[in-house]
Amino acid sequence: MSVLWVAALVVLIAAAVLCAVAVVGAGRRTSRLKQRFGPEYTAAMTAHQGSKRNTERALLERERRLDAHPVQPPDPARAEQLARQWHDLQARFVDDPAAVLTEASAELEALLKDMGFPSDPEDRRTVLRFHSEDVLRCYEKAQGIAERAVDGMPSTEELREGFVNAKSVCESLIGANGVSSPDDQPARLASGRAR
Image (cartoon, rainbow, N blue to C red):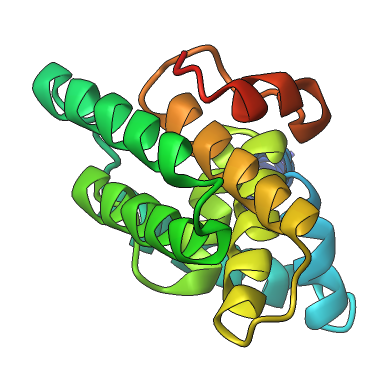
């Protein structure tokens, strides 16, 4: 075998190794993105007409933006203040449920801002989804009902559900009891008892 054949063989082996490393690396990146973004990965694939390359490029960009805004829990004094505010809101709910839900929604938005959540709605939902699918579901439900409350549309039961969902998100974010289903909490709201 000549030196030229040996050099060609070495180049081919090196190229094969580089290709294998690239394929394994891409597979790991895909797995990591799927794990981090969950159902969002599938939604992004649909939005990018099934293009894995465009999907991953978009998700990597979103990941970069999200990582630039780390979410911090509120300090203990702020958490205690929030607990008192939610107790007061809950006590006033019976007298004016729509106004209380609007105020609760504003308190929740202020908490998210204080904790460093992104202001972009899509990014905010992504960060909430990272926290928990239940937190995201409760947040979206609470915000949807609060938006309809401005127009006077929801029933008192829907307002109660919106309030319970907003409070559940707040409790989860400050580390109190996690998120429970709104159906698990009607007695707590009716009794006016704080956690």
